[in-house]
Length: 339
Image (cartoon, rainbow, N blue to C red):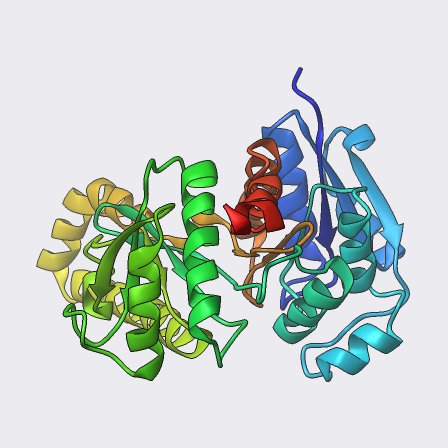
């Protein structure tokens, strides 16, 4: 059997914790035999959920945490004061190498602060971006950054491009991924001050496949494999993606249930439609990794259910097996920079 991959999971984070978080963790170890999970949270509540399932008890550890960081808390104060929280303990375990990665559906702010302060950035990395995979007509695209760095500099975007390229090649398996800079036009001269300064820097990078600017509307078509931007733009793209997707699904369901004729049609196309909609299910890709840290931190959305938790754990396993942290560390090592 392959070597075990251990993943720390914040059992108290998110709208459906701990029930859906625990279910996702159990689903993960029941599906893949080389995964161990450390569930961090209020021991009694976590064990009560675990008692509902059949699983290999040797591959699940529960670490009691008396503190819970709430969504509305000030992130810096929460991380500083709540040392016995699942977020703080989970990140410390990953930093110390006790686990290969950490997954949380909890406070985004606390996870971002914790990732930077507790896990720490790799030497040479200026900022750590959040980078979710989003579905496209041809597969997936890594949107980097989508929430960590609202005010970024050109050098940050260049590093995002390099980390994103490493991730797509190593984790997703796309050789020589196409990297594009999000702008308001494809022409080199288009964009704001940030994109205009960043474009020539990316153009000079010989270690990535930079293809130029990309407009937001072209991302769903599969125009690039890595879409680079600061977090304000990235978050707007991501939220629009989610909103339009939910609206289309609602409209399609409404149309199919409109009358007897459409209901009959719905039955005829049900299986084909289900397969098509599955391709646009963001949860199947896991959460958003926070790249450039000394260990993997994966943030999932607050209303995460078991499916995305399971897939985020798988994401951590692939990240570890492909040694992505080491590859990013090598990319930004002083020796590499000099070369």
